[in-house]
Image (tube, rainbow, N blue to C red):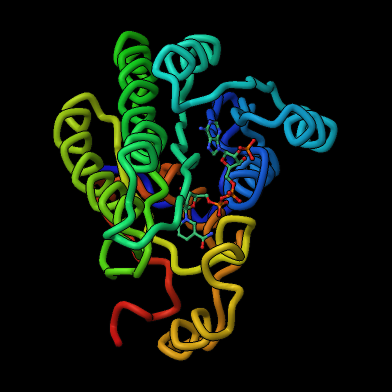
Length: 250
Ligand code: NAP
């Protein structure tokens, strides 16, 4: 039987954590919190200046990559080396009405929001299995998986796909002691969030349905992700966990 512990402080000492989309927003905060809990962070993004600023702050390793390109996604995962904790956070949202959704926007969305996650997770998980590491993977999904959002056809479809991908990964990788979970945040006013929700005509009705009366902050998401990555969540596998202040109950 597992021994009970009174030490609730997360500690990722000697663990290497790969965070995609760590240059801005939610991914950046996840990288910062992982560092605060002693993880060695490897940060992936496109914008060099963002990665430099993060490196200056937390001393992480950085990899510049365009994850929409499968060869780049493969290179990034291979360059990251041996990884114990993986956060698939990078995503794009191209807002178009359904009738105007272009093939280009659809393909670009699926390439970043789904295909890159498959490529990176295959490489990282195979190395975990080869090293007999009982690792943990968190995929950043969205409430857009449960909610039909106007102008978000490709994005909503990608996040619904991601939750089901997470479930299949949880089944197949679970046999190797690797846990895979998703989180489904409500609006966070990052650059991506502002583009879709800063107009009060759009954001107001959304906010009104959140019982806690506020949008989420990057910190709200990062703290849950760190918990899911930790041994404290050792029996959580295959979740799609809303982080939405109770929105899903309304
Ligand atoms: P963000 O502010 O737009 O930041 C996204 C990060 O991902 C940036 O560092 C960006 O790098 C990187 N990225 C995007 N596309 C990339 C690509 N093709 N290759 C490499 N890096 C790429 O987004 P966010 O709001 O923090 O969102 C983070 C995650 O949370 C996403 O999965 C999103 O779907 C999810 N989410 C967000 C909200 C919200 O309201 N904000 C709500 C629910 C779920 P560059 O800037 O260098 O391109």
